[in-house]
Image (tube, rainbow, N blue to C red; front, side):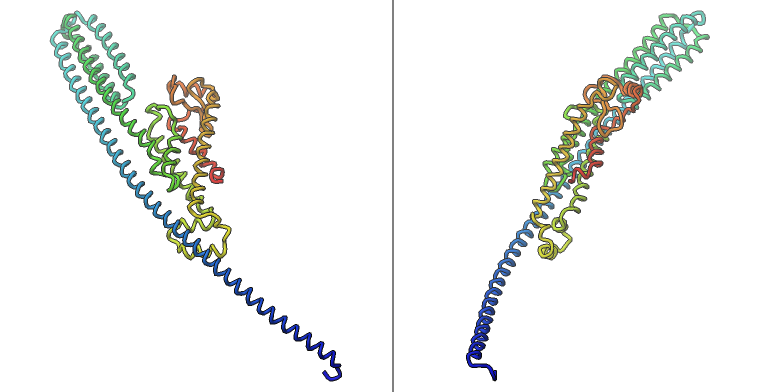
Length: 423
């Protein structure tokens, strides 16, 4: 500093001293800020560890709940198998009963043929041929008409009565052959009337046996139908929409069925399988939906992943994806889907009610949104399916098959509107 005056040197010394003191002060302040920041970081780390512990605890609870639900589903599947086995046993009893009926019919037919053959062979006369022929023609016609009437009335067990009709028509053919043989034999009118009386008595015995069998068979069918109906209403428990909503699912499946008692041709195994398919579609829908939920929820639901490491990574890189815990997110998603399904069902029922007169096939028939033609009502059925088909064809419409029920239309509506349901 040669050449600089003393006051200038003093000022520079003071200036540098001040700068040095200021730098020391700033360094001390920075150290205090660093210590404060480290303290906050430690607190945040402890908080994150606590939240991680809570999430792992809730994941364990969810897994425990899932195990219990799977056990319940296995128990209900076993119960369903047992009930189906009972139904098959009842069906076997009905088949055994039908076999006994056919044996009885064959025995009565043989007895009837033997008695008639004996009477005609011993007592027919050539000079009574015209009267005998007319009488046999009349009785044969009555027998055929009555057999046809019996066949029509017993159409609910059509397979059995086709055999009955075949056997009785063979009896009528035998009478025709007997009439041809009557040209060389004799009998009195009273003998003929006696033979026809035996024929009538035998036929009445057959009809009585068939009526008893019909009542027994219808009772078996009624019991089986009630058993199937109870399985439909309880099936939703075994195919829950989400594993933590078993009871709500049963209510949804029941709401898909009409409240009134349905006839046998509507309440069938096809309807049972339709409801089963609806549940499977909804269950598959939930599985697909979980793939689009935040990444954190997918990780929580998959027990095969390293949950701890994945959640730590997500806490670091994707905080916004885990605003809610896994249990609440799954529950909210399931409840949203359940509400959407109930809303679709209610809306569809209102549309059906508004469109009762849309099919010009008059009372008893209407169209269903999402269906493929004219449908028959479940309660009021004043017409046969043949009449309904003719009526719908006259209006240029196609009659829907009996198994194309409301459940099918609802299932189609759900499948075709997946984006609406999961939104």
